[in-house]
Image (cartoon, rainbow, N blue to C red; front, side, top):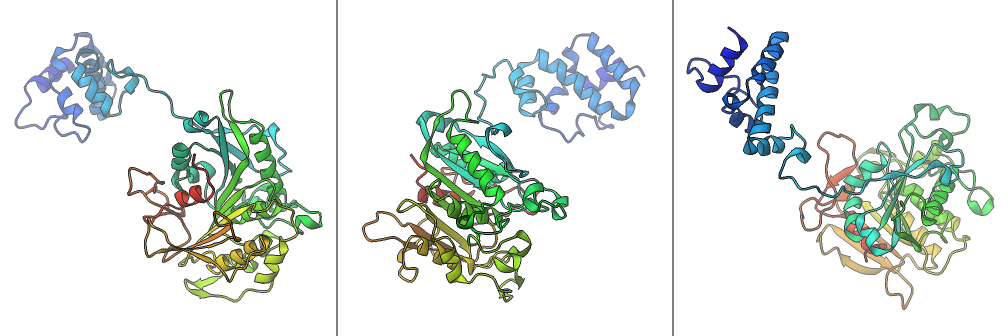
Length: 446
C-alpha cells in the first residue's frame, strides 16, 4: 500500500472495523477536526507524508499529525485557531492574534555594582510596571529560606503579586548551594551554604565591636547599588531611600533580623517570618542549638538549648546601635505548629525589638484578630504614646507550621501559588496572605 492511497482512505472514509489513528489519539480536540481536512491539502503534502512515513513507521502518528496540521494551519482558519490554542504552534503566528506587551522580567544585578565582600551571593532585581508609573518607588529586599531559590520564592510567596499590585521594586539576593562550603577554609559565607541558607550567624562579634558579617555587608552594598539606580533599566523608577524594607523566611528572616540590627539607618522596617533573634549565635555551626532551629525531637516537644544568649541578652545585644526614632519597625510572624524553628523565638524577637525601641514588652496593645483570617491570627502591637502605628508587631498563626502563608482562593487579590511538583517549598495555602499583611505593615502600598 502506498502512503498516498492509505492516507486518502483514512482521511475520507475511515473503516468501521479499524480504529483510525486520529480517532484513537489522546491529544487536543483540535486534532479530531484536522482529521477531516487532509483531502483539501495540496498534492505535494502527500509526498512529504510518504517520505516521513517510510523513514520510521513507529512514529507514524506524530508525522501524520505534523503534515496534516501544517496543511490545515495554512488552509483553514478554524483549524489554525484550534491548533494555536492547543499550544503546538506559537500564538504569534495566528492571523488574528494581536501582539501583547511582554511582562516585566527580573534582571541580574551587575556584579561590579556592589561589594560582594568575598561571598558567593548574587542578586536579581524586579521592576514591575506599576513601579515605573509611581516615579519614586519603595524597595523591598526579599531573602529566601534554605532549600529555596530567590525567584521561585518571590513568585510563590505572594510577594510578586504584591509588587505587581502596589508598584515597589524588589531586590532578591540569592545564596549559592554548595556542599563544599562545609569544609572551606573561609567559612560558610565565602563559598555559599550546603543547603542554600543565608549565613545569618556568620560573625565573630556584633558590629558595635568592629566586625560586620560578610553576607550582611554584601546585601547592604546591593541595596546601595539599587538605590543609586543600578539594575533598574534606562526607564526605571527612582528608589525612595527612606522607604527601604527587608523581609525573609526562616534563615532569610534570620538574615533580615541581622540586617535590621546592623543597619537600622538603612531600613525603614522589616517583616520576619519564622525567624530567629539577631546575634543569637556567632557561627552557623552553632546556630541550630543556640537559635532554636531544628531543636525539636517531635513537633511540640522542645529540647533544652545548650547555652548561648537568653532573652534579656538578645535584647541587649543590639541596643547600642544608632538609629532614627521609630526605625526600623519590625513585624514578627510565627506559626504555633512550627517544627523547624522554635515558636518561642517569636517571644525572644519581641523582647529584642521592643527593648531596641525602649518599649515594654509586657504592655502590648492588642490589635485583635486579623480580619481576613478570624480566629487563627492573633496580633499584638507595641508603640510609644502618640504613635499612629505599631513600631513592633507580633502575629501568631495558630496551627501553622514552618511555611510562608499564602492565599490562592481570592482571585481579586492573588497571593502566591503552590507548586504541586515540589516537596520542600515551605509555601502553604492556609487561606491567609502573609505578604499582604507585611506589605501593609511596611507601608509598601501607594
